[in-house]
Amino acid sequence: MLNPIAISLGPINVHWYGIIIGIGALLGLILATREGNRFGISSDFFMDLLLIGLPSALIGARAYYVAFEWSNYKNNLTEVFAIWHGGIAIYGALIGAILAAVFYTRRKGYDFWRIADFCAPGLITGQMIGRWGNFMNQEAHGGPVTESFLSNTLHLPSFIINQMYINGQYYHPTFLYESLWSLAGLLLLLWIRRRAFLRAGELFMSYFIWYSLGRFYVEGVRTDSLVFAGPEWLASLLKAMWSPMSFFGWGAMEADKNIRISQLLAVIIIIAAIVFICIRRTSKHSIPYRSPINPKTSIALTIQGQHPQES
Image (cartoon, rainbow, N blue to C red):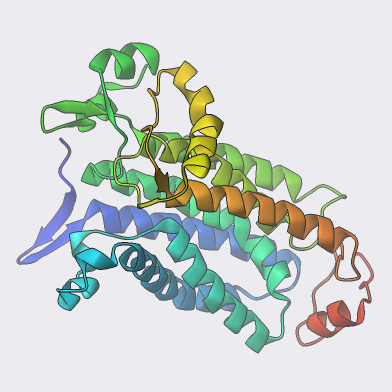
C-alpha cells in the first residue's frame, strides 16, 4: 500500500489526505474567484468565504455523522471531537458550508444564489480531488471484488489495484467512481454556465442534481454507509432504483429493511432541486445568470422582482 504520510517532521506527521484536501480547496477557490472576477467581485471575498466555509463544513460533516451514529458516542462524549479517528459525512459538510455562506453573503449584501452559482464548479472540483485522499487512506471503499474485476473489467492501473487490496481482499474503488463522476460533472457545469438559458441559482442546483445522482449509485456498494431500519416498501424502492448497476458487475444491494441515508437524501435532493428550478422559473425571483451583480442592491432587486440589465 502507499504510505498515507507524506512528510514527518519529528513527532508531526503530515498526511497526504490533508494535502489532497487542501489542493482541492485551492483549485475550487481559483475557479470561484475567476468567475466572480467576471462580475466585479474581489478575490478577497472568496478567500474570506473559504476561510469561513472550511471550518463550518468540517463541523457540519462531523455533527451529521455523530447525529446518525449517536449510539456509539453517547457514552463516550470525548470521541465526538476525535475527528482524527474517522467519521465525517459529505452531506453534513455541505450543510455546514451552505449555512456559513448564507450568513456571509447576506452580510456582504450579495444574493446567496448568485454566489452559490459561482462556487458550484469549485465545490465539485474539491470533491473530485478530495476523494483521492480516501484512496491514500484506503477508506470509504466499496464491497469485495476480485482482482480480475479491477484489472480485466475496469482496466485499472496497478497502483490503484494494489491500493484496493486491504487485509487480504480487493474492494470496489468507490473513490474513483465518485472522482470520475465529479470530473464529468465539472465539465458539464462549465458548459452550462455559458448557456443563455441559465438562470440564477440553477447552476448550484445542477451541481446538487449531478452529484446526488452519482452518489446514489455509488452508495449502493459502500461498506461504511449510515443506515436506519425503515419501511420495507421504501427499502425495496431504493433497491429497485439501484438494480441497473448489477449489470455492470457491481453485485447487489442488501435485501433488508436497512435504508442507506445518503441514498435517500440523494433522491430527496434531486427532487427538491428540480422543484426549486421550476418554482423559480415561474416567479419574479428568476433572473439570468449573466445579469450583473452589485453589492447591497442585488438582494433588493431580486426581492422587488426587478431584473438588472444584462451585460
